Every structure is written in C-alpha cells, then in structure tokens.
Image (cartoon, rainbow, N blue to C red; front, side, top):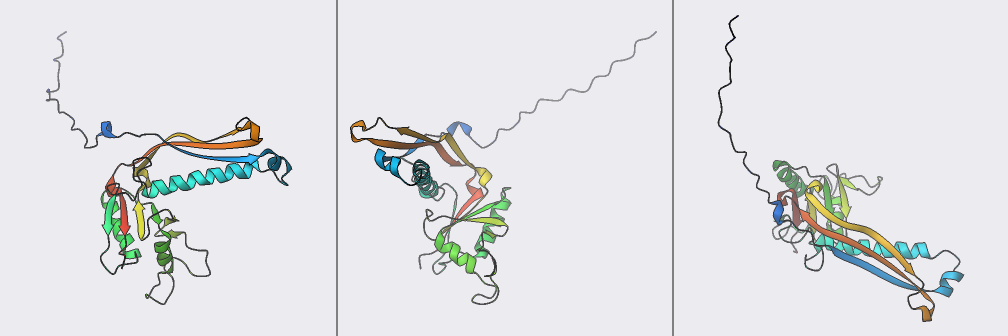
Length: 233
C-alpha cells in the first residue's frame, strides 16, 4: 500500500513582539513612617467615668489619617508622600484669569479627555471652596434648579455619577478628576498600636504609640489624572 504524501505548512519568519513604553524598572517605593504618641496618667485612666483607651487609640488613628491625607494631596515627595496635586503627578489644567470657580463644564471636558486615553474617570476630589460652588451651580446661573441636587435632598455627594470627595487637605481652588485604578499606593503595614506601662515608670504614666508605614504613592498614567486649578482672581 502506497504511503500518503506528507503535507507541511509553509514556514513563516518569527516576528519579534514589540515592547511596551512603560519602564517598571524605574518605579521605586520608599517606605515612610507616620507616628503619634500620647501619655496618660495611670490615675486618670483608672478613675475615668468611661474607658479612655479606645478614644485615645481612635484619636491617634485620626491624627495619622489626617497627615497621610494631607501628604497624599499635596506632599512634596521628599520626607513625605508625593501628593496628587504635586507638579508632574498628573495633567495640570490651569484656568485663565477670572475663572475663579471650576464648573461642571470644565469637569465634563476633563472627563472626556480622560476617556480619550482609554481610562475611565471614577472620582472627583475637591477643595472645600470649589465643592461649595459645584454644589450650588444652578440651571440658569443664579436661579433655576440646582444641578447637583435640590435643597430638599441630602447634600450632593455625587456629580456626573462620580463621588465628590471633599478634603480640606487639597490646595485651595483645586479639583482633581481621576481614574483611581491608575493610582498605586504601597502599604508596608497598617496602623499598629502599642501600649507601655513601663515607659516613664517613675512618673506612673501609660504611653500610647501608633505607627503606620506607607511605601509611596505613584500615578501610572498622568493623562488619567487631571488637576484643575481655578484662577486666584
């Protein structure tokens, strides 16, 4: 019986897969420590009408959270985090003279610009002064219905379907619109509480210490984070 002829596919030259533009070798996270410490008289802790240790721990956590939020917003990036509002972290949008209030038109433009890069804007961060104006924006300028919500509704916490996160730690006249999936935070360890009754033993006090180590903040795509700055006048 005759053997069947063997068929083979024609050979094709190997094509080298092109490399991406991102350079992951250059991204480093330097751990930064945040800490807070309190002391309390043993007599006061023992004689207080309520248990004071939990409120002290809560206060220390809030102190650290406030400082981290401040640095994550406008830190210089030397002995602290590099904040989102720092030059180079995102795309700067500086409004011209007379534009002292960022409007929904500005935010819609930025939303579209972020969308054009393939990212999806999903959060609005605002300084208190700009959030006030955005919440009071009306259909006809100075009259008509409010754009964000009616006065009979709860205070507007969303706009364009995005959460409005207000922080006094952002620089004044600032609104940030971003795709948060392009923002990366390195966490070394979460807040740790420690209590010592041996510290200052001769003073009969109890020491409370809270520490938190965060290993940097980086924006993967500056075009996915826009920092809008209103004019001063």
